[in-house]
Amino acid sequence: MFLTSLVARLPLPSRTVQKSVGIAAVVAQAGIGVTGSVVRVTGSGLGCRTWPQCQPGSMVPVEHPEYAGLHQWIEFGNRLITGVVIVVAALAVITAWRLAIDQPHRRRLVALAWTMPAGVVLQAVVGGMTVLAKLEWWTVAIHFLVSTPLIWLAVLLLHAFTEGDDKPRWLVPPIARGLLVTLVVAMWAILIAGTTVTGAGPHGGDPETHRLDAPIETLAQIHGGLLVVYLLVLTMFGLALLRGNAPKRLWKRYSAVWIVALAQGALGSVQYALGVPEALVSLHVLGSALVIVSTAALWCASRDRGVAGERGVASADREELTATG
Image (cartoon, rainbow, N blue to C red; front, side, top):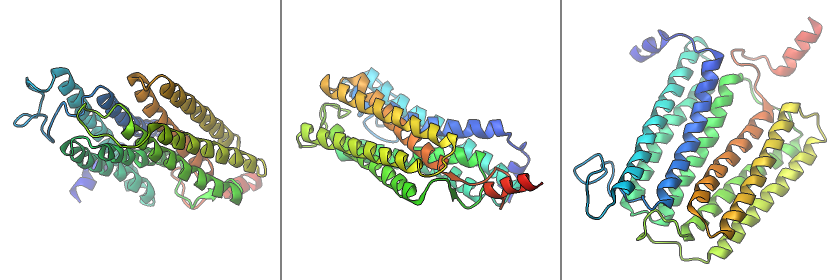
């Protein structure tokens, strides 16, 4: 295959390059959500009133009597940032592809890498629907929620670059594994509930867009209540870890989740008390991304897939070989 032979001519990516590409994927997937929130809170969601063009007949902002130039450029700038995400996604695929040419068994790494450009295409389609639907609150919610599994997958991709392809060997007791799954479900429930609060809130992306007709106080209480559930499950997960011999790395990831989740909860409370100021909205979106990243990192630290580049030699087997040899 021509493309395969072309990629094979590239130098084998170093561990530093692999890690850098993985980190870039996480930053890109999380960052595009934050920049999207800037578009929303500044009321620039319809600065470019069509898609894929900005204004009918023009791909770039043009002088228009109904659409302020600043709003056009904010929305257009967010579309340009999508180009950065595309470049990072392409680098992820090429890096994983080059590694798989020398290590054909790394199919999982390649599959994870391909989710990055696939996610860009999906987000472009959903983003276009959002604009064409005049920023109806539920389309904005879908646009945000589509980005959340992409952030999760980017974290898995980062770890896939640095770990092996063995069958996962869980480092936590069975009860802790069940609690970890529950924690992930609770996390996504919080994110979904958060979109309803946003849908009923004052920042719709455009002054004329329809808002969710529901009491925001009730929606905020549900959102906050789900965070309490998340923290309770996180507490039980920590207690379950005490029953096993969890590695130090796992405890560090666990502590990081607590720090991020508590900071996000405090930020949400302050945001609500101050009447949802624009700057705090974008910080809260950033906090949501960090909750996903930290929870995904905790998930990855809870199991062992061996060492990158080695196949079929689990950590326990390597330790036994080291002890006897």
